[in-house]
Image (cartoon, rainbow, N blue to C red; front, side, top):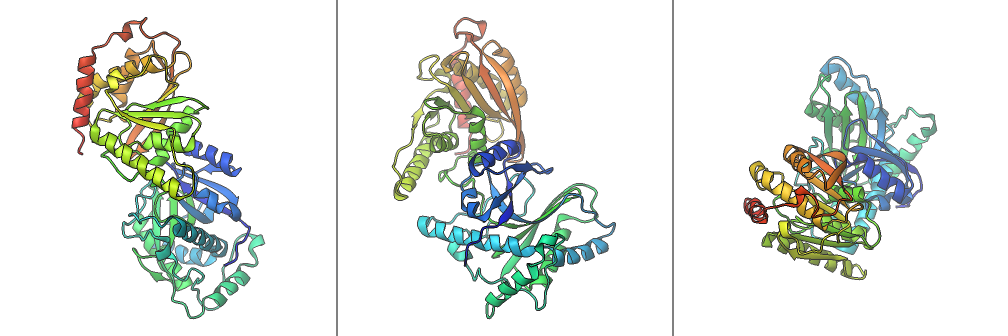
Length: 475
């Protein structure tokens, strides 16, 4: 298969709330301008296909797809029967060829990557933060997906009609595809519909079924909901309609963690939090409640000129972090890169950190929500003690903290108590496993620790509260 240098529109799901952060990374690493979808949790950007491999290495993106066609104001008919006829006409009029070429090129990239890594396949995770239909039965080994990828089974005398004048050669391109496919079994496919809005006369399942039938009739592909080669995406948000073809089998956030805990943070969300910190060379960055180490691992791999120190008072969590670090070191060593990460893991008491005062540049952590770990009642004691100890070790005037929690009421009360030591800069509202949470960006005031009434603490009570929170986690 020859590689070609064309422009393609790539869509990506991202952690909800971090769309602008993801757009910044796209601009920084691909020199491309991303636009945020009206439907939260997605961005779109145009690239030339020679940059497709680089897209898979972006840290902010969960799932990727190539856009076949976008409609900003699609006019849906009033009845299901009329909408069904519309889907049939739409499937036959879409400019499929360029997107399918990008899909084929993407699979060749994934195949080469799979040959180098030979990683054990893992089950597919949820496709982003929207109501996406995914299945754990999706094969994740690139070799398994490489089933006659040159073949694109189409009907005799079919036409791929584009609404854009510059795509007059679509029929000619499809003829070339037909020439390649003689004697090859048709591809397997499925259609996944993500729909938002209350003014539709159809459900997501209705749209997926009807549009899927139209796609099957057009290409003569074989429908298969589990072991499919091609996943066609139908994204509907009110009157915005985007048709695409999936480029990822499982979410790109499954990259660093192999030993999971009860509340392991997605790597893409951890990366977004780290970008809010803007780590600088030689910064000392601490995660005092690291759990399985998702945040410090992501940081140590991306910002290798900073130093990361992470800890937890739970021995099992520390062991998981250590095992995750060992896995990363082995992977990078096998890949020919120099081993070693600017990262240490320590078991400690959060409310009595073994660190000198004013020695830390940035504190970043995922605090217990009081849902799967701990309780809201215990957070009322834990949160003020956390903020107080963080203020002690953080540098006055220049120190920062980025803290994630869903227990917004408790956190706001604790922050009010520590008002002389911390100032809230801004808040990013995110979706964490279906929970509405906040990423609070704080700045350390210039007030020296030990000179205000907020410095007075009861370490025994605070430490017990933290211990109770950890013991409540299902190990």
